[in-house]
Image (cartoon, rainbow, N blue to C red; front, top):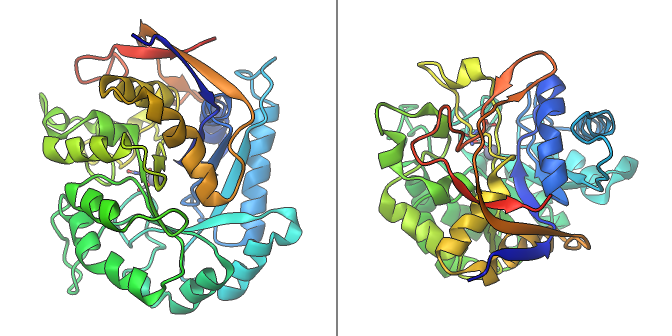
Length: 368
Ligand code: NCD
Ligand code: ZN
C-alpha cells in the first residue's frame, strides 16, 4: 500500500482568485500548493485587455508579497493570465496579448455563455458570433477556454440546467471545432457522460483538451440534495448523476495527455454562498490537491496523478512542468474553519465539517 507520494508541483489550469480582500485571503492557498495557475478573468469589471490583465497580475503578486500566511514560505508561484471573451475584446488585443507586448503574455481567452454563471453577463449568447476574434486566436495559437454550457435557447428561454453541457457538446462544440480547425480548445470543468464521450473520441494533445474539478470527481447530485439543497457544492456546471461522475472519474484516471486538473476554485463570501438564491462556485484551493490524490488512490491510479495534476496542463500551455516537488502522505485530517478575509468575511472551502455533506474526513495530506 502506498502511503506517500512525491510529484512535481502541480499546475492549476482553472482558478478564480477574485480581487481585493478576497484575493488577498485565497491566493496564498493556491500559491503554496501550485507552481502555476491559469487565472480566470471573470472579475467585475472583466479582464478583457492586456493592460487590465497586467494590473490584475500585479495585484496577485503584491498580495503574495504581503501575505501573513506566507511569512517565511518561499513561493515561486506564477499566475498565468487570461482575458474574457467580451464584446469589447478585439482581434488587435489578441495579437498584442499573444506576443506579450508590455512583457506579459496572455495564455488563453475564456468564454462564458451569457447568463450561465458568476459574472457571465459580459459573455456572448452565441460564441460563434465572435468570428474575427476566434480567427485571430486560431492564427496566433491562443487557446480558447470554454465554459461549455448552453444556457438559453434561441428564444432566450432557459434550458434545463442539467442539460446545458450536453446541449453544448451536441451542438456548439462540433461547429466550433469544424469552423476553426487549428484553434486550441479546452473544455473546462467536464461534468457529464456526454462530454466524456466527446473528449474520449476527439481529444488531442495541443488541439482539444478538457479539465476536471475535484468537485465533479467527489460528488453527484444525491449529495447535492442530501437533507435539502446543499449550496456548498452549488456550481456551474451542476454536479450530475452518479453515472456521470463515474465517467468523469474514469477519463481523469486513464493517463490521457489531453485531460488534466483545473480546480475551478471559486470563492464566494459566506453570506452569498449560503443564501436561498446562492451563487455558483465552489472554493476548494485548501483541499483540492488532497482530494485529487484521494480519488486517484481510491481508483488505484496514483501512478497517473502526476501527469494529471502537474504535467499535462503545462504541456498544453507551452510552459515547463515544475522543477519543484510536493509530497503527500496518507493521513486523515479535517477542515473545520473558514478562510477569513482581512475584512472579516468568511469563505468556506468544500469538504469542511461545519457545512459539509456528512463524511468530511480527507485521507491525504500535504507533507508539511
Ligand atoms: C465560477 C465563479 O464563481 O466565478 N463559478 C462556478 O460555478 N464554476 C464561474 C465559472 O467558472 O463558471
Ligand atoms: Zn470557473
